[in-house]
Image 1: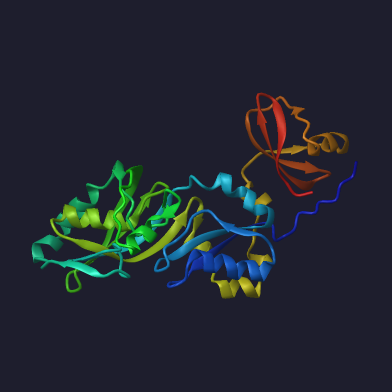
Image 2 (image 1 turned 60 degrees about the horizontal axis):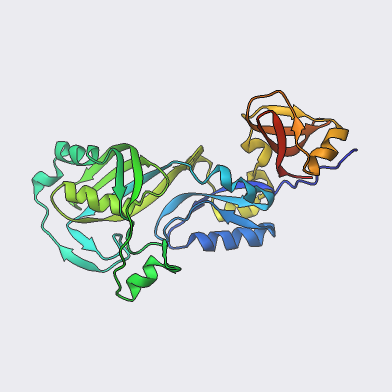
Length: 294
């Protein structure tokens, strides 16, 4: 059975460099209008945050299961001496403190950052999109209700000081962390380690899994050359082994029949007559369909 690969160039991923003061939903909406395809993301960025926002397009939305656990790297600026109700620059000032010069001594700051390394329990901020009883936390916060939120296990893999602005009372750092880490909460904790208060003034996501800020493009760049900037599903799995399948077996495979292959468990790229069909997974010597483009 000879099949035509109907997979479109638009099936895949685009790495958007999100600008400030727009939501992740806004970006999804704009890209959807450009490609006229289904578009999704694997994790939002705060409206005042910038940087790497991977968007899944068309059948690329099926890649979400392979991206949800991705680690992330951020570049952040912590502002000391003020506490805000949202833990970022958008909120109201609820407390102020004087910042003594010794607080910003380099060894003191490095020590405070190092304390954050490793696994730990983190309570998400009230101004977040986490749902409790079907309602987002920020909806409760806007009504003045304080809801008890269960702590989550997160991990800080690496944290590095970039610079200290003693005049502005700001600390700039890079942090690599696990999924689910709130940098706003991290900033408040670092300030606490320094014996004071603070909030996240700026946030830039510079890496999500294997996707970095160097690969990210603006919405305007994507609109000019959308096809050129798509990472195809085949490219996403470039390091996976391939299986060349016969036309006869392909018909069975596409109908959901599991085929026997004496190969290790894992994900494989599937080809018929050198044409990329999609992906399949092998478990206990049985190959079943995964993401199919035909």
